[in-house]
Length: 153
Image (cartoon, rainbow, N blue to C red; front, top):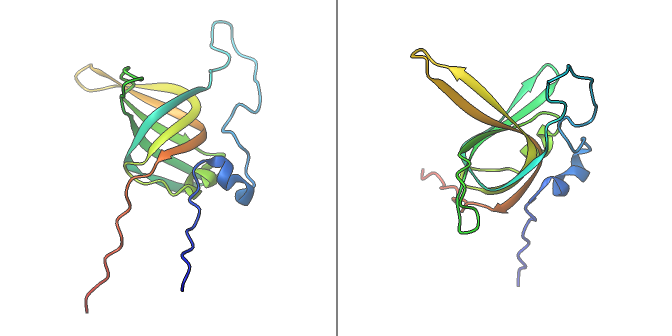
């Protein structure tokens, strides 16, 4: 009889951090003096039911790697608010985010620091893009994976 060995799938940064030995957060490490009236520190938030809508990408920069992904908030019975679409970013912990091997339609719980970007379009309209600098990702559920089809010769 043969035994089936299932590989443990990483479900959060805690599962992959012992292997990668990288810092656990993307920025709240130092505090800088600010000008009067300028917001000093942004609060970390936790958002759940975020579904990946674009495949996560990692790119190399001069200072290391940067990981990014686009997600959309999924409403449910307990979370009726419409939070919309977010662009997730990880730089200090990009390797941990990449090691989770996230795919489109995975459902996530994400912790991080939010910020918004406003872009003025040609017609004078302003488009707002919500961003989140990720400090932790926890996979709530994975999308069904498609088995690779073999080529027929």
